[in-house]
Length: 411
Image 1: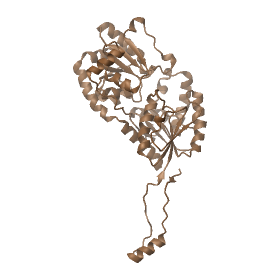
Image 2: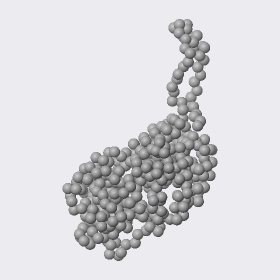
Image 3: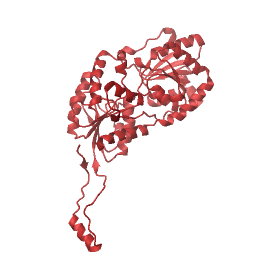
Image 4: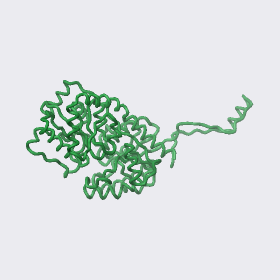
């Protein structure tokens, strides 16, 4: 690895000794000088920094790189985009934005982008390290690379992924894991999963928990009612946040809600915030349920924070998660949570969350009814959640990601 120096310092030791002897009678044999002269060029995959379309990978990239680039002006960062970018993503003067073609949104184009286009770009801009917040790496580049692998759902639930995407993931991600100089992931659950599934040493993997935006906060009742009027005809609501993806278990949540609506006559509507990850996962509702179940599609983070903070509860009954950011967003908003009891969710939620079996509609229904009907339970979970949310911050995420990058530099 080559370090560049921004400064030059020349010391003529015999001349210095002559002066010292003349004035002090002493000589020196060597000089140890510590100066902040080393700097690096760090390439970053920023293809998910998309104006008005930010999702999980994008927010991880945004929140960590915003902090890291501003906190480390001694280094230069090359941001590699796969399409025209918004200037708001150029956080500081030590960032050089580069558009690399082709746009990498199909498996074939992703292979070309990472293995050929990025490989050439890394050489052209003389990068020392490549950091990839979505886990994809260049298998042809020779420089050290850091992959942030968020989860391995496709390895355990292959039925959740289209066949062409599954084939690409199954072939490439084991290679990414082995190619990486270091791996970061978002929970201890995911760290263990990567170790066991791909045979990666624990020493090579760092956990960088996700954070939460300060936009998520407790909302006054008058504002809550305003949001309800906007989205659910003024009725209280249960909210789900996330991509409409099979592992998010939205279909079972809807079935449980329908049973609860029929059996208990609850006044609550169900508000689903997110878009289908693939077109095949769009959900069709019976005409009689369209009055009570609402899809918002993608919303801005400001609207999302208001929607979250105005909900009676969050229902996040996913059966596979690497982290589960909506849990922390709800906790910080003072909103009680029902979550699935699988994978990383108990690690993130702790005792501040009520859990259910995500594979059982009956379990989802009964636990959701308990949460809606027991005010003392809701208040207890809100209090615990507000305290637990303090453990998660994008400041901590950026710190831990930089420490992982530092381990590559040290080696």
